[in-house]
Length: 115
Length: 253
Image: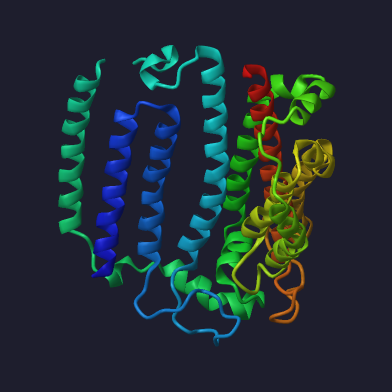
């Protein structure tokens, strides 16, 4: 049953993050909301990989064949977390340049972001 | 579009999305149908076929190493993008930036407590990072995690001293070369598989004895390559962001 709760949390994170992106009044805040949206994928992936009563997929001190959670999902996530940090750095660098260029941090006042 | 109109559009869209989610939720398969069959294969094969004990690293650096290359290059390109965005600051003569950082943009010098603690922490931090990278195939860890730990060593040095010392310790060109080397090493390790007339990135090296540092064939090598790239990439990010903020502070002051 816990997996359904995790799915619900993932959906909630996605929607609340999107809400933050749309109502954001500061570019850094917008960037943080994007991270919240992305954390929905973490919750979703770990939930899919979860198995009741299984160990972490490390067999250093457990005999091979012990039921373990899905290592593929964990592999996806751990690379994603590190890569996301650098992508966020890229976004923040863009924000620094926007601030220099337009003297604005409110997405509504940045000309290039008007839609 | 003004804010209220945008909010209304979002609420309409979000309601639709939420409705679709609820519909999808009602028809979810049971936990048994959600089981990923590749997970069982990966878990079952890790110890007998690869002589490693960390299934996550084995998946990352062996079974889906090709995807990991793609992810690593997202990291590589992001770091490159940040460097390109900050190229103007970086292109300024070194002397000017040095003067900026020594005209402290930081009002308070670090306390003795911070200095002493940093001195104590730097060596264990580096050792711990290397340990996590080297044991990636055996215990929780690997290149991605260890690389980030390694990158924090220059950062805490900056906290205890100033940017000038940081610049001396983390030579920009050296770090740049390390990052490129890490990325290139990963790609080149994959070529070994081609020479053995197998697919790219096939793990063709001898697997060694289970639970040794050298077990797993190419897994520990790729882990080290990734560790170098991640550590160097994060140090580069720290470098340009610190440089950027220190010059901006001075310019505005």
